[in-house]
Image 1 (cartoon, rainbow, N blue to C red):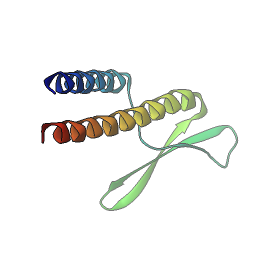
Image 2 (cartoon, rainbow, N blue to C red):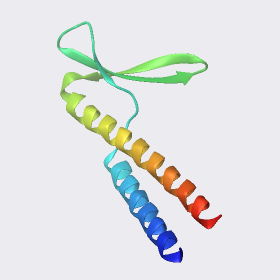
Image 3 (tube, rainbow, N blue to C red):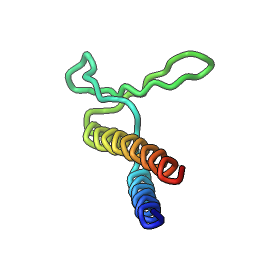
Length: 95
């Protein structure tokens, strides 16, 4: 049982290191959507100032970078969910 807990701890540690690596490369939440004008695209990231939603616009040349950051953000979310599941398994094993 202690061996299983050690393996779970090691797995959680590896996932946390991967999350840190992805965060260092840069992450975003949101999605890329086309803007009505063809030569532009906008990054549909909504944040709020004084209760008012604000969107952030990006030129087309930044689309690839933004898409990569969004993909890394999704990967981080999935890894965080996996860590939560491993922590639940750890609690069940200890019980």
